[in-house]
Image 1: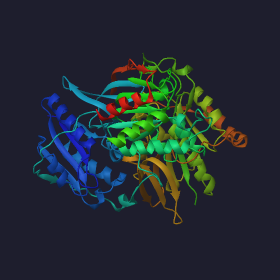
Image 2: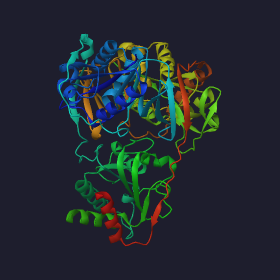
Image 3: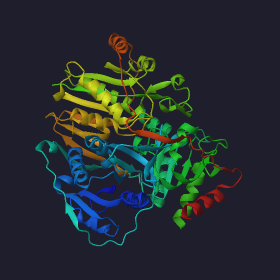
Image 4: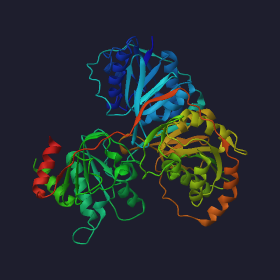
Length: 344
Length: 267
């Protein structure tokens, strides 16, 4: 009987992330599709009991845990040792987890160590006739491929937004603690903490309902022949504050900021979406002052409902990609949207 | 003591090119792949610039660029990239396709790194992009690290600084636009770079001339790298059709547009 190992790590508050719960949904479905497989839950973190209890009713045959101070931090050496120990205990065929910076850093290395294989950034995992396959994208989200692998264990990290989060009533999980022998050399790296973008407003919100995309048009000369960057900043930040939307930037806008020109002060490479940026997943997306053809528009790929505001009725960013294109001045429209939001 | 920095960088089709998948004798491939203009992988290019910058300000340092691609494509890309940063090329004549498996590519890269003459493993920093613009696996560098026995690994790196004591202070991208700050007591380490913090350097003919002395011999002696399929197969490879029927709203007042957007956001 094959084992599907659902792998998760705790967040700083000892809970599981939304992405982790989405992966649990996928793991349960995969286990059911495989028929005779059994589901095992494995969690690592500083203290895993709270997280294990929160998914106690998921139908897993066993709960494994690696906990302790060394595992509270996201660090390759200790995470690799922990996941290796969990896998050697569970002997899984498939290891399924939600994509996270912590797991993305370590899974390929652990898979190689165990003689297996790993696929990060999967958007679907399923089994048909006993054969497991995944879907993932190549060439910066431009080509979609379904693939199978013979090697086991097969680690699959599922992108957030690919499945619905597992809704749980919780309970009490009996967690079997898996010992991990950590050589002293595994603590050569220490984690100091997290740093927000320097001096900037927090504008990236992966769980937001709306992605707001700003293009280079915000920094260009307007109808009066002048650029109005401070106005643009004020309008965009006002909108983000009122809607709690996440901010994305087009490559051209972010690149301008790299050349030292006066641009939106809060826009960094971290905001960039598209081929060489992030591929965020949000239910809705509103693009303003963006333009460009297909290769630049891949940042839209996983946004379900898309609208755009642009002065160019033939805008390549929007045509065939947005549901609605408003041919209008984004400065004027967004000011009025902000006023309406204020009233509401 | 300086660093020995090995940058792993593939080459990819120019991002502005239209890509069409086909089925070739070895599995999926791109239509006219050998004809497509190629560039150094964007994130790996950042890694190279960061490596050159670090080496320039750290005496007794050296940069190697390990790259696997068809020899003719490598030569084409190296002619331009050699103008921007000092490095010694280690060329592998092999596929550059995104459909090759990261495990197999990593094995070839690790073997090439192991074969570099004079490489001091105690001073070794392995750089690369945190994922490629072709395979997008985000896996190759970690496997290279494992093969080299390096467990100090960092991905999505935007900043590396060396402290007075010689330890490394590293900023890695994590969720929510944040960076994780880590301190590593020194090399060896693997760093998969995101955008980094340096602009692309201008072309420097002197750097280009210096690089050329080693580039051509390296290309001439590039060994054929075997990349095994290793149990991975594709059941479908396609460019999904995602064309939407865009409703163009041309003559509405800004008040009406704002109201419609407001209702959509709240709906």
